[in-house]
Length: 166
Length: 338
Image (cartoon, rainbow over all chains, first blue to last red; front, side):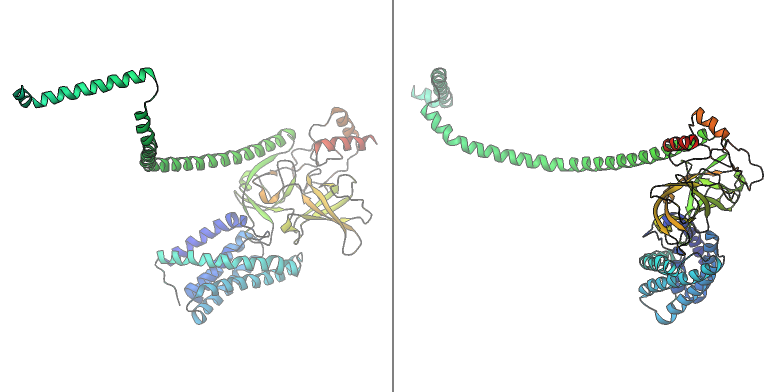
């Protein structure tokens, strides 16, 4: 059941992210549901599953982008583990705000790493553009998206009879 | 006699009442035939009429009230039916608008195929976009099975440049648009024939613009100048429209000029594109008059290298192709005559 749940979400996000989500732009920036899902999975299912989901979802995200293969897989792996640790140790109750904050901070962190990697590989982006024009706006956009997505994910977990780890 | 009355009391009363009433009717009929209403009538009806009016109004009100309550259900149903009909009509209108736009787009694409028969174009639909915010790419629903290879130029219906193929699958391909910094295009300013390179800029990308760089320092550029592909580099044929100059500035090094370019294609709203399957050196102009065509044949043309192995069509080269066909013809002819 667990594998089915992750599989369904993976298929759904792979279909939605390059199509529908890409149209929901705010100042030219759209949210990243893959990152949101990894954070929520980490909070709800613990560090182990968060890490595995992070690596898997990050890899698929990398495959969709087709550049810098493995960067997102690695970043999301750490993010999933971190979310899992935060979820189990610090936020046993009232996780939604913590999910939003983690998704926002994770997005910003990913933007910094992406900037460094991209500067190393192509050298075609400035720090201001990467962090403030892309990272910050995306991070702010992720807050409400992660909040709303957490409800949907919690609901699907309930349908699939998967319990939340707290 | 007394007994008769007592015995037939009812009959007597009936006859008596009939006679009285007959007399009354007769009198009233005589009065009505003669003058207007009598004083008695006036007094009776004058007093009762307002009351009758009030009572009648009240009756009407009660009647209307019952009618209203009776009609509410019907009205509600009618309202609901009209609302649904309105939604359906609205949806149909929007659908027809969408179909109209699509139709127009497809017609333009068909025109492009007709006006440029030398080009082997493959129509493709945009199915997705870059899932991240870091690269300006598109996914199309045609791939290697349909003859798409890496590096092939991608055009819009109005022969405007969109980008080039960067990744290819069996039935999908990724297009790097000109907004992406990875995409560099040899460009030429249509009016002044200044040569430069159009490339994506990370900061301008979100505004849907790109940069024209490597222009000479004394380049005479003006806002609104049309930019098109120069054909240098061999990836893109000459004469594809890129965009118009929006803003001109000095380069950071002050060694050259650069300009912000507004692409001709609205890249955020693309639905249909063309992939140029075989390389051509120059995209010829449509509707060129014969006189100019003769001149074109005489005009000198610098050969442009083509990376693809078997170029299927190499049309007559035209030294100049501009954004708008109308302007194109005039400026083209003028330059050639000079």
